[in-house]
Image (cartoon, rainbow, N blue to C red; front, side):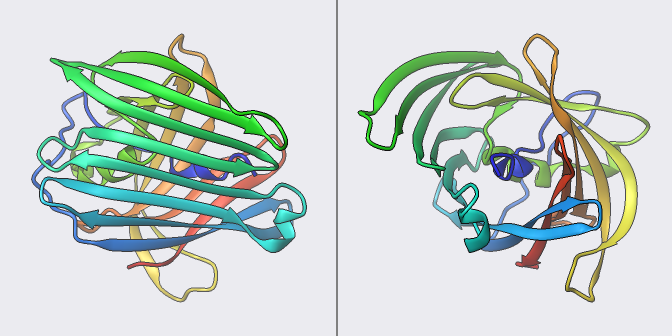
Length: 257
């Protein structure tokens, strides 16, 4: 169940001639997803996730919540809330907070961003505790060169990219700050496909994207993640599939379009 929110860690900006359409505005929206575990013929809905965007005068406020269903609570209960504020002008994150309650453990990560030229800096405060224990607080500072986001802000940045120019094997690269360090992400457009989601009769024309995650040293940190975003101007993610050590975890849009 710890992999559930990782499905939203996707996307990004830059390089190889691919540019973002920074002027593209986003309206207030709420997108709801069902997260499903699949192992062979076994398919079981395990959690739900909701992401909302609200407009402020100079920024977007984004909130992602995820929680396990009652049956999954008995195995690995999870309640996660992630928030991010993004500059409308630059689409760069201003601050980010992740609060997790997972199987009796609590963690809160707060990241404040600053920028100097092409360099991004993160001032991180992390609070951790287990049931019945006194919380511990640590402070860290990270830096990265080039496009840098977090697990929420990157969700929207990708939707401003021009995927028609992301062809011919071009790769988009970016950095992602978390409470523990810096991760690198690469994204490739595998072309257009028509997809449907469980329980729905509607079919969507989508770009099929493949995301690869590595550590700063270049070591692969997780299996590739496949993402399908609508081929219209909204680039709304409708389907995501990630590989686990046993089986797959899948995420499907259930409302919002």
